[in-house]
Image 1 (cartoon, rainbow, N blue to C red):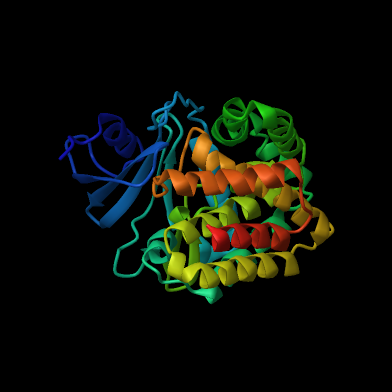
Image 2 (image 1 turned 90 degrees about the horizontal axis):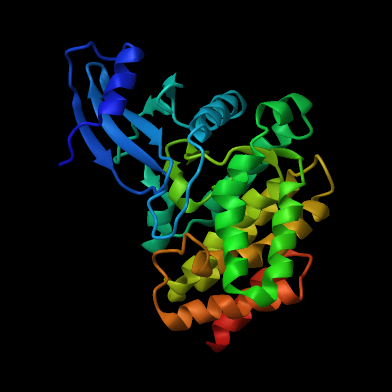
Length: 335
């Protein structure tokens, strides 16, 4: 058991959640690479404390500004107003330490969507709700100059997303450097809505009120297509782990995308979809050859399959997510 974190203890005292003599029970939680996360048992019940790290816990050198914790807190506050049951209850924020405190979600009531998918529990209705809620957040924040100014975090998004994913992959695939760099540049220069930046099944709980979003460290006013592509990417990759569930995973892919684009009304939905369809193969490749390779794809044959699909679609882009899905499905079928 790790010793209680002195930085978090100091933050809890500044926030007056504990007194100067109290050392509450603290249990480190697993699952993330960019933050230290603890369960802390206070007098009134358990809370979750999250502290951003300057260097991420991966093999590659990957550093990121810790002020991202402030923007995550702001994203959570904003989404609380838009969809109150879609984020944890917020308790307090300590700017000095880069920590914030939120409600602790008990295992009896909340299950990570990632765990459900990997265990073969694939609920198309839940995927549809994810797409619907994501579109609601994007729609409520689209084309808002005040939010653009509040979340002017392009340097953080570059450090946590564009560089370690798309640009790092370009170094591994120099023949695709032009395509991958262009994707990164296009994303960086598109400013349409408030983006979560890490809409992954590991950051979405299935709870009593439907999907609950976590870990908005990459919050940025930018291209909403990134969130859509980032999440759909994980549904494709999980086909390699649950081969018997490919059809259901692809139906979940469609359910999420269809629900999202039904409500993507701030600009032409076909424009958002085209950008997502262009981004998706780059993100597929990044989870194999970027700085944060997906941990559950270990077989070299599976890695080569991802590279094959991604490279083809990067060299010959398509304009719809259905075409990306079909290319993926065809390659799986002959593998």
